[in-house]
Length: 202
Ligand code: MLT
Image (cartoon, rainbow, N blue to C red; front, side, top):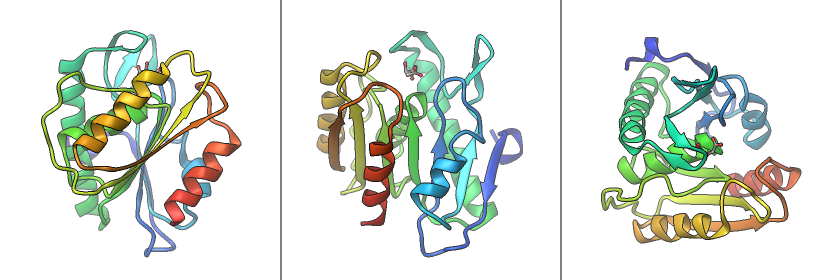
């Protein structure tokens, strides 16, 4: 898919020394959803925010699922590759450095798939309420790519063991993973914002 075919927003940087953020919304969100979060997390950074191309009962997503937490992995692989191509083209057209992904829920899951299938594409990732995206990803080398995973202790969608497994798999692929479990559910809280902002600033 070319850039023109992907509904997206791009906010140019006013602080170009900051890494661009690739914002990936949750199920039912759109390209405007995470813009305020991106501005709060890294003021002045360029923002690149695509809309998920799949519709589930009218709700945009980044890939198909068979049930909640059960993914159509063939579709996920294809959509992750499409998203990687979008990022590459957007970098050229908008003159962006490699972005740090900030994904929530479904957006965090495709960000995790991007890390595993396209090592080197992302400068880092903040994965908010992510789970293991692919049962059998290729053995890429993430070469120390920094990843922050923030999970919710009472999350009814992402079991604690699944989030821990994601952290383990990303570490095994060479990412520098920080995994924190916050006292919340699937929704985002003030603590997510504070932790992600500190981590991005460090
Ligand atoms: C997913 O489908 O990616 C996860 O179940 C999270 C969600 O979008 O609800």
